Image (cartoon, rainbow, N blue to C red; front, side, top):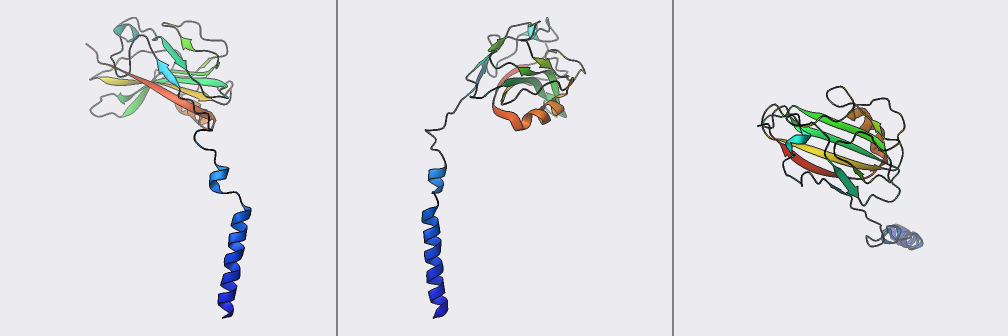
Amino acid sequence: MRWRTALVWLGCLVLLAGAALPSAAAQTPSSSSLERSVMHLQSTAFGPGDEIPAEHTCQGANISPPLAWSDLPAGTKSLVLIIDDPDAPDPAAPKMTWVHWVLYDIPPDTTSLAQAVSTLPPGTRQGTNSWGRTGYGGPCPPIGRHRYFHKLFALDAVLGDLGDPDVDALMAAARSHILGNVELVGTYQKR
C-alpha cells in the first residue's frame, strides 16, 4: 500500500513540476514568427541547369560569369563564393571535386560580380583553386558533360586574412558561421 501512495505522490510532483515549466511549444517560436530568408543566386549568362557559355570556359575567353544575389539572411557580415566541379575527371566515374574559384569576406552590401570582374569589392579575399592559384579558372572538362556549382554562403562573421586557403581550410573556418546558402548549377562539355 505504501508504494501505491508513494507513486501517487510522485505522479503529483511530476505534474506540478510540468505545470511550472513552460511547454516546448511556448519555448519554440512558431514558424510564422521566425524570419526566414531564402537566398537567391542567378546569372544573366546561364540559367539553372543550362550550359555555361564558352566565353566563360577554357575554350573561350576564360572570364568569370556575371553573378547576382539577393535576400541575404539578417545578420550577414560577409559572403563566401565557391565554384566547383564534383564530376572530375569523368562524370561517369568522378574521383574528385575540382575547385574553379574561391572568394571570401565579400562585403554583405555587395549584390553582384560583373562578368570578367577584374577588381573585387573592397575587403574581398581570394583562396586557392585546384590549379594552385587564386583567381577564376573556367570549366575545362577533359571528358563528358560536367556540372559546375556556384555556391554562395552568408556568414555571421568576417573571417579575416586566412592566407590563400584552399576550399577545405576556408570551409573549416566558415562552417560554424554559416547563416544560409544557395547554389546555381551550370553545365559544360568541350566541343
